[in-house]
Structures are given as structure tokens and as C-alpha cells.
Length: 420
Image (cartoon, rainbow, N blue to C red; front, top):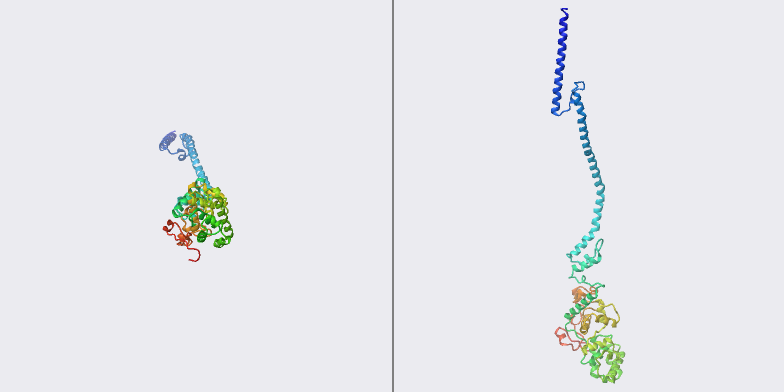
């Protein structure tokens, strides 16, 4: 019995020690749990699964934290998808970029002519012909030519009027040409020598198919021998033919001048009538001859449509008619009636001196900026001056007795018949 008591006491003490050790362990685990909650750390990951039941609440809290982790992962999921979107977005521009590049490459090809045309529209480029050439995509040719016309008014080619110009524009251009010619030829006059209406009538009939100079060289001998209509009507045809031989077609012309002289003597008392209706009834007298006589001998307006007049008004596009009567009507409608006679002189003077039939002197023409036919002749100024005739070229005129105004302007009288 005495030996067993210590053993029981030892057992009791062992049980007490175990209880105290377990209580200390519980306290230490409780304090550890409190620290983890205070620090915000995960107790489930740090404590072993075999420890006190105090870990169960932490295990219950762990799923809550896992849900938060899931939420975080869910919030990260869009972030992970966002790069996917970015990659898709980056792929989309990569796929569309070639299309944009292709359009960028095509755009300069289409817009390049427009840039060239805009340079021509600015009016900074002087060579007008080069500016007119590019009429490609996106540029209206009509506007380009219109802009080109306004960009270079100094060049004569740029101001050429089109065939489709309005009636008002045609009238203005035609009258401006006449004004320019009046300044260039202030001494314009009929280039047939005459002292009375009868001499002018005969000289005009003789001027057909020959020059006024040749007529002026021939008529002095004719009028010296036959001064009046009655004298010429009673002349011997062969003698008249011999005098008129230098004018060409002398037989037909002899018949005409003798016939009209006889008509004047018989029907008009030896006087030249002053009406168009009466003049055109005379042998060899047409509207052209009648208007020359009416305008220069009687002061009544008329348009003289000779070969020079026909050529020039067609070059200037005043009319497209070829019949002299229709040309007379068309041109007469562009001018006041009071201007008709001097208009005829201006046009004929210009046609004989500058605007020749075969080779016009375009480079020396005073109305080159207004002429649609500019460039048909010589455009070089030095070469063009060599083509000028009569007083413009320093040569004698066509009249033996020209008016004083012509002499004052530097003109020289024509030589008499034969070599000078």
C-alpha cells in the first residue's frame, strides 16, 4: 500500500501536467489565431489540419476568402480577355491596314492630276499650253480651259474665243477689233484713184480680178481720153481694150464699162445714181461695186465684201457664210450702219498689209489677242515684220494720188504704169 500511493500521486501529477499542457496549447493556438486575424493572413494555410477546433472557423472563412480570390480571378478574367480583344483589335488594323495602304497608294494616282490642275488654276504657271494639257480625273475640262483662259491673259493663244461664244460676246469682240484697226490705220481710205463718182464707178468695175494698184496705173490714160460717160459710150471697143489690157479680162471689162457708160448717158442723164436699186441695174455693177460708190462718192453707208473682207471675217469667226450677200447681212448686223463704210476700209487695209491669204504676219498683227486664227501665219515678230506690205513694210502704197493723211503717216504714192 505504501508503495502504491506514490504511484497514484505520480499518475495524478501526470494527469494535471497533461491538462495544464493542453490548456497552454489551447491558449497558444488562440493567441496565434488572434494574430493571424489581426495581420490579415490566412490561418488555414499556416496551421496544420490536426490542431484545435478553433481552426474550423478559419476554415469556414477560407472559402469566403477563396470566393474573394475567385472574384479577383473573375476580375482578372476580363483583363485576360482584354489582351485577347487587344490582339484582335491589333489584328483588325493589321488586316485593314493593307486596304488603307492600298487606298493611300491609289489616292495619289487619282488626285495627282487634280493637283496639277490646281496649279494651273492658280495662274502662277505662265506656259499656258502645258497647263491646259492635264485634263484627267476629277477635273472638268470645261472648267480647266475656262480657268486657263483667265489665268494667262497676256498670251494671245489663251484669249482665243470659242466657236460657241454668245451673240453679245461676238458683237463686243467684233467692235473691239474694228476699234483696234481704226487705231492702226487712221488713214484708211478707198485705194482707188478717182475724182468723181463716174471715175470711181469705172475703177471699181475694173478692179475685179486684179489689184487696185494696177487699176490706178491704168485709169489715168482711160479718163484722159474718155472723161465722161458719153465719151466712153461712143468709144471704139478695140481702143478701150488696148488701154485696159494690163488689168486682165480686158474684153469683158471693156464691154462692162462701155455698157454702163451708155446706160448712164441714156437713163440717168450722164450722172451716176445715188441709190442702190439703180446702181445694180447697170452692166457689170453688183452690190459690192454699188456700196463702194455709195459709201465713198455719196457718203451713204455700205459694206464692201471683196476677197480680203471675206477672208478676214471668216478668220475672225464673225460669220461662217461664204455667199457675199449673206456675209454682208451677217457682218452688218454686228455694227451700227454708220460704221459700215469705214469698217470695210479697216478690214481691207488690214487684209492687204498684215493678214495675207497665204502667210499672215501674226507676229506683227495689232489684233492678235482677239484673233481666233492666231498662229496660222508667222508668229515670230522679226520674221513677221518682213511679211508686211505697203507702208507697213516701208513700200509704196496703191494710189498714185493718196490722201494727205496717208502721206503724213509715212505712206508713199504708187509708181505710174511700167517700171519705176
